[in-house]
Image (cartoon, rainbow, N blue to C red; front, side, top):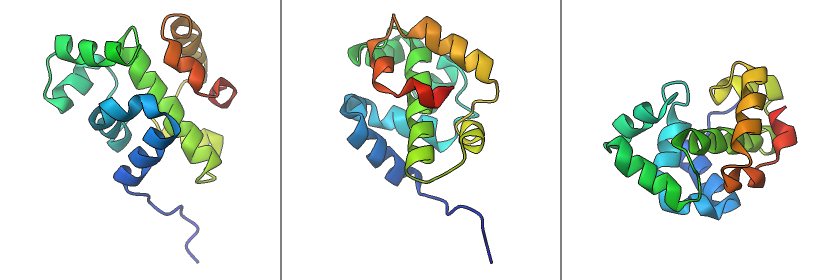
Length: 131
C-alpha cells in the first residue's frame, strides 16, 4: 500500500490559493513560480529571473498588491501554501514547512514579525499556522 501523499498539480494549488486570497489573482503567474519550486525561489532576483522581469518591474507588481517588499510577497505565498497543505491536503506541519521552502522556524518567525507591520497582506494568512 502506497502511503505517499498524492501530488497535486501546481495549477490546481495556484487556483485554490487565488480563490482563498483574491489579492493574489493579478500576480497569479508569480504565485505559480513560487509554488512550482519554492526552494529555488529564495530571493527577489530568483523570482525576477524566473518571471523574466527585472527587479524594478517585479517590485512594482508586488507593490500594487500592497506588499512593501518582494520578500514579503514570497513569504506570503509560502505561508498561504503551507496553510493550504496543512488544512486541505492534511500534510503534517513539519513536512509542509519543508515542502514550501522553510527549514528554519525561528527565522520564519523573525521574518513574519518584521514584515507584518509593513506589508498589510501578511495579516490575511493565519500566522499561528506559521509557528
